[in-house]
Image 1 (cartoon, rainbow, N blue to C red):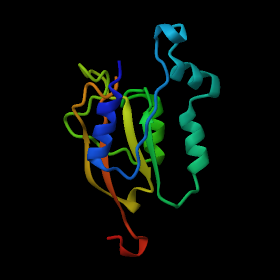
Image 2 (cartoon, rainbow, N blue to C red):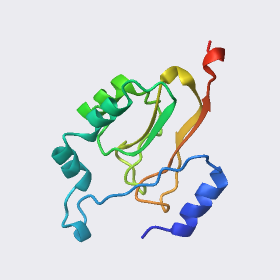
Image 3 (cartoon, rainbow, N blue to C red):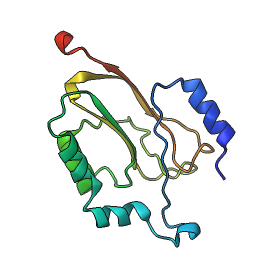
Image 4 (spheres, rainbow, N blue to C red):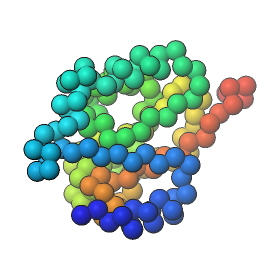
Length: 148
């Protein structure tokens, strides 16, 4: 059971400008044990290529965050990394499941890479907020005229 009060407290304490909340079912009873993200990807021909197409010529800074489901060495992440900057979270990078993390499937990425500076990026140890550990990133948007 998700502790909504604790989730709200974590969000309030972090004072974020942006919060990405998501959840679709993966192999649970209420959805007939279907991995909905994988199935939707199959049916829509992997959302990653659609995102690449949508933002291909975009020069405005864009942030993309969520539970992507694929592991870091997957074809999906390889495709996204060709077009988006996916910063490393550090050694403690596993996000799922929150109580005993064994997989990294939650990511925050941005583009163009030279328009952002990562101030902080980490996974929070909050096993009761969700079935995924929260990922925190603090980004500074760089002015194009002041880039080094």
